[in-house]
Image (cartoon, rainbow, N blue to C red; front, side, top):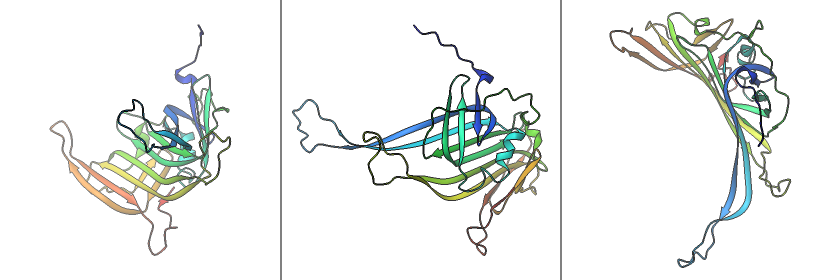
Length: 266
């Protein structure tokens, strides 16, 4: 029998692009896609017939981290780092005893949201070209430091805004080369990551129909989208609630400038 003691709660932490975040949940996945073949002689009277392993296949790496937004987190969220296309960084999780890291990561999804009664929440989804299971991950008690107090929703928004949700998506595909793996019996890892288009969207619920916001303030930082209004709506949820107006805004580049035109201003 082995007795193992581990520290939970604030004994663990998360790290994104070298900055420790107030991690609320997170995880990494390594998925293998082997190649199988079927035999031609599948006889009805034989008691056992199954597919056969043809090749070790390929392996892909992905992960996600959810966290409460602090001033330190805003440093990589709103200074054209993670919001910038094809930005590569490292993420890590420490459970209080052991750590797991992934290197050469690219954002596939990123979201920020603020709503009444809660903290400003962030979530980052990534895909990576490789893994690094062991490695140092920043893990200090940061809640008492000047820039690590979590922001409440009231530190964000705009005029007449009740709640908001900002999302970023980026098309990232692993590319594999037609060559033998090393070692020979292991699945092939990505040769490099192919990054496609990046897009941003903003959903805002307001108390006033004329407030179709394209800019949201997050504490001392803000971001503004360039694009089009995708939808507008109105909802009334009963006599105990106020009528609410919803606005959905999607980013796009100016065709007169080209796809290289900036669709977000931070």
